[in-house]
Structure formats: C-alpha cells, structure tokens
Amino acid sequence: MSTSTPQKFEFQAEISQLLEIVTHSIYTEKEIFVRELVSNAADALEKLRHTQLTEKDIFDDKLELEINVTTDDKAKTITIQDFGIGMTRAELVENLGTIAHSGSKAFLKAIGENEAKNTSLIGQFGVGFYSAFMVAQSVKVYSRSWRQDEPGHVWSSDGSGSYEIEESEGERRGTKIVIKLKEDCADFAQDWKVKEILERYSAFVSYPINLNAKRVNTIQALWLRNKNEIKDEEYTEFYKFQAHAYDEPRLRLHFSADAPLAINALLFVPKDNTEKLGFSRLEASVSLYCRKVLIEAKPKDLLPEWLRFLKGVVDSEDLPLNLSRETMQDKALIEKLNKVITKRFLKFLEEEAKNRIDGYNEFYAEFGIFLKEGAAMDFTHKDQLVKLLRFESSLTEKGKTTSLADYVSRMGSEQKEIYYLVGPNRAAIESGPYLEGFKARNLEVLFCYEAVDEYVMNNVREFDGKKLTAADHADVKLSELPKPEGGLSEAEVEALGKWIKDTLGERVSEVKASDRLVDSPVLALNADKFMSPHMRRMMKAMNKDGAESPLRVNLEINPRHAVLTHLHALHTANPDKAKLVAEQLLDNALISAGLLDDATAMVARLNKLLESV
Ligand code: ADP
Ligand code: MG
Image (cartoon, rainbow, N blue to C red; front, side):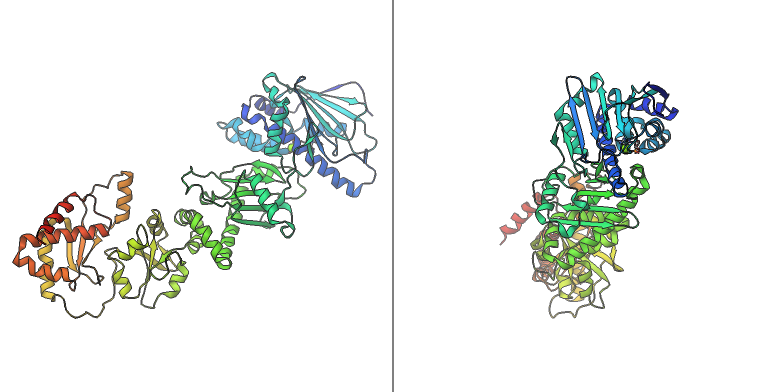
C-alpha cells in the first residue's frame, strides 16, 4: 500500500552521530562526496546489470547504463543520476535510514578508537551516502526500483535528525540525488570544479559518466584487462594519464593474483630517476583502487619506502560481488597487499636481470640506488635485494658489472670473504695501492663508487655465508706469497720500520712490512675499527662529531720498492732529508686513502725536497 502524504522518520542514533561529524568536516575533505555518490551510482548500475542476467521483466529496460552529473550554479545544486537498480520505499528506509552498510560503520568504529584524529579520517574512509551532508543544505533522493509494480519515491532530509519519504510521480528507473549546496560549498555547483573531482577519483569507473552532458571518463581501467590484448601504446598512454607523466615508462609489470588476495596491479618504472637528477625526494605514488574507484592516490604503506619510484595502480576487490569498500579500510589488509606486491615485483626484477640483461643494467644504472637502500634498510626483503645488486669489479671491464652470486661462483676454494673497495671511480681504485695485493693473489675485488655503498656493504654484512670485507681494512689477512728476490733484508726492514715509527710519532700507530704491496712503496691502513676512511670523509662533509678525531693509521711499507731501499741508505747518511722523505711517504699514503685533509704542509715540504734534486 503506497501513500502520497509525506511520512516522517527519525534517523538511527548512529547516523545522527555520523551526520554531526560530517557537517563539521574540513573543506579539503568535502569533495569526496562526489566520489561516494558516483560510486553508489556505479554500484547500482552494476547491480542492475547482474539483475538483467536473470530477470526478464525489468522496468524501463531500454535506459542506458550511465551516470549523469549536472550542476546549476544559479540554483547552487548538483545532481547525480543513475539508471541503476533503484530503491523501493522499504529500501530507502533500510539503506538510507539505518547504518547496516558501508564504510560509515568502519569509520565510526575508527574514530571511536582514535578520537584525536577524528574527522581527518573521512577522506580515507568515505562515509558513503552521508558524505552528501558535508556540503548539503538539503538532499533529495528520487528513486524508482527496477521492479515493475513499485512506484517512485522521493526521500528528503536536511541532515538534522529526521527525513521524509513521499511518493513521486513520473520517475524513471534508478536514482537521482539532488543536493542543494550550503552557501560556503557553492563551488560544487561549478562545472570545472566537479570535472576536476571526477577526473581525480572516478576516471576509471566502468560506466560512462557525463558531466553536464559531456563525457568525463574516457580512459579504461587497463589493469583489469587481459594483458595479451593490450598494446604497448595503450600502456604508455595509460601511464602518462595515470602518473601525470611525460616520459615513456622504462619497465612495466602487469599482474593479477587470486590468493591470498584478489589483486590486479599495473606498475611502471619511469624512464628517469628524478631523485638522482637532484629533484626532491619521491613520494609513494602507486594508487590504491577498489573496483576501479580511487581509494587513495598516494597511500604511504602500500609499498616499502625503497619502492617509492614506482608508478601505477593496485586494485583489490577481495570479494567480487561485495560492493562495499569496507574491507579496504583495514590496515592488516594493506600490509598483506604490500607483501604480495613487493614479492611479485622482486621476482619480476629477478627475471628481468636474467632474461633481459641490458635492459636490467640500464634500469639498475638509474634506479639501483633504491635497491641498495632496500638492501640496507628493509630486513624483510634484504636477501632478494642483495641478489639484484651489481658492481664493477677488478675482473669486469669498465662499465660492465657483476652480481654477488657471480662473484661467489668465481671464488677459489681458499677464499672465504667477498672483498670490496670504495672509491670515486675505477681509475682511482685501480691506481691506488690497495688493489695490487689482491691482484697478485688473483682475488677479485668489487668496486663501489657511490657514497652510500659503504653503508650498504656494512649493513648487508654477508652474502651466501661470506662476509663482505673492505679490502683496505687492517684486519684483512692475505696469504703468503713467495718472496721476490732483492729488496731489504728482514733486519733492515725492522730497523727502518722502527726509525719511521719514531720519526712520524703519533701520526702512525704501527709501521710494518706489507704483504699487500707489489708496485707501490707504501699504503695506509685504517686503524680505527669504527670509522673507515670513507665514513670519515662523509662525516666531515656532514660536519658530524667525530670528523676531527685524531687520525691514526697503520703504515705498511714495501721492502722491495726503490724508494724504501734508498730511504734505508738515507736514514743513516742524511737523517734530516730522510725525515722529509718519510713524512712525504706517509702523506702520499694518506692521499691514496682519501685521508689527507690539508695539503698545505705537504706542498711546502715537497718544494723543500725538490730543492735538492
Ligand atoms: P555503501 O555504498 O558502502 O553500501 P552508502 O552509504 O554509500 O554505503 O550507501 C548505502 C546504501 O544505499 C547502499 O548500500 C545501497 O544499497 C543504497 N544506495 C545508495 N545509493 C544508491 C543508488 N544510487 N542506487 C541504489 N541504491 C543506492
Ligand atoms: Mg557507497
């Protein structure tokens, strides 16, 4: 039995509470009411489509499945209309008067637990239909069910505790929501404003959305299509649109998973690493969608920090026919998504590294720094990340790299550790004194050129059970080599070493014959267990404490080198000149180690030495 006189209803207590909160929402959140109402419209169309599959007798069956948004800036109204499933009188009461549904429930629960954060959660949650009251003076919902014999109704409320329902003549199938905007929300009756909002949140909704009779959403939700049917150009177009990018993506990963979660994801690695170019730190920007509707454009926890260079979309609809987004508002769920996607992306990189070596190396040259960051900081994914790292080494050509796994496969049975040297470039490392002892023993040394490498190596610590060891560290023990002919005798070396130590005093902690030197006269080894030369330089650059701590090194001398045999003769014949030579040798060693802070004294000394040439 229908009635044409308006009937008045009170809202359920929780709804009144919710309305109280939304009416005090801050301006930036208000716009999401468009997203919420459009999503409801899309849901209603989707439900109708399902109904059409089984029901033959549907009211107004010829109507297009589309969403029409119209604005009237004179009257200050916005109208959202769909030709979806519609609502009967009972459904209007049930759906819009009680809070059995929707994200609203989860929202209320969250603010209950989280009083302080309060309304700022609205955007994240979406409070469904009630979000209309953030901007509305009054809301009218005209609706007519798909069922043939149900009349149309209009539901109306000003959001202050009660609503009315009345029969309404001449309604078409579906729902039309007319919002009379509050004075300070009149912007939402502007075409440009609403267009912007629709493009941001609803660009991929599968049903056509027309704003004032003009179609807004023309790009498809590519991530839900079968990848075998998608052309490269389509991917590129999508990337440019979705990521607001101008470049061509370097790599892409399009995948779906069913377990443990239903996920469709389309991820892109951009062409360039803009952080490397000196632009500001990237923000996480893979967007989270649920059934094509944007949940969050830049969710922080969806991926680990070191994946902040990725662009694209992750869409999860856990239950295909569950039309609520409530499930997305769950932190544990985000964590699960994070785990699945990260794992999948790492597997993808592993495959790239194996099957498309050049492409991977180009990617690595640009984005490797992020993998290093992950290897050093992300304990969960460290092992997989370390496998993806690449370095030049003493055995690669310039510009070619090796993985740690390949390094290990080349190690002789004697070798227990993985050696590396940090330096500004290949030439600097190769011409320094540290490498020669390793070369003479056929030990491969990885070359690290980036400021972070030392930190990374220290944090990674080991690979495949082998310790990562700085080749210029004093603790490194190298095997005996057959002693070449010539040079100073052991007694002479000892005497000379003692004399050098006495002459140089506090500047060195130990002087001894080297087992590493082949071609160079001397080298300095860091005697500070806690601060490597490179760390020292970095600290100095950052002006941190410790930069000025007195420097002490172990000096190793090469008894077969002409400079040392000469010095041995000189130290008794002309001790004054010998002292200058010894000091200069130490400075030379410090320069090679990158440890000489001030060269002024050295230059003066060198000039003095040159006088006697
Ligand atoms: P949710 O969409 O999460 O269920 P909402 O508060 O957005 O929560 O909507 C509440 C309910 O109202 C919906 O579940 C749906 O049954 C009904 N509803 C809202 N908008 C429409 C619409 N345009 N057409 C049909 N039913 C709707
Ligand atoms: Mg909704």
